Image (tube, rainbow, N blue to C red; front, side, top):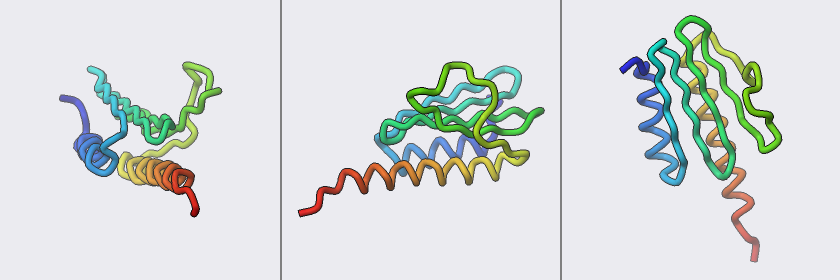
Length: 103
């Protein structure tokens, strides 16, 4: 498998921390790996390329398909994974805060 260990660890952590999340990991023969995660009806993408770095984005309902480029770019996969986890945590917090109904 061409999937870097950081991506494998990230998938395992997301499955543990967000059991309701939908995950799709697509490791390509070129070494590029694309991870789609849906948390609280929000879609996040992490795309790793061994030659071009890593991009992280949130795909919104009005995001056109096949948009060129990501919201954030990282030379380090470790930095991208940390940022990606922060994005997921923020989405989960927002979902929880809107789900809580005050008495």
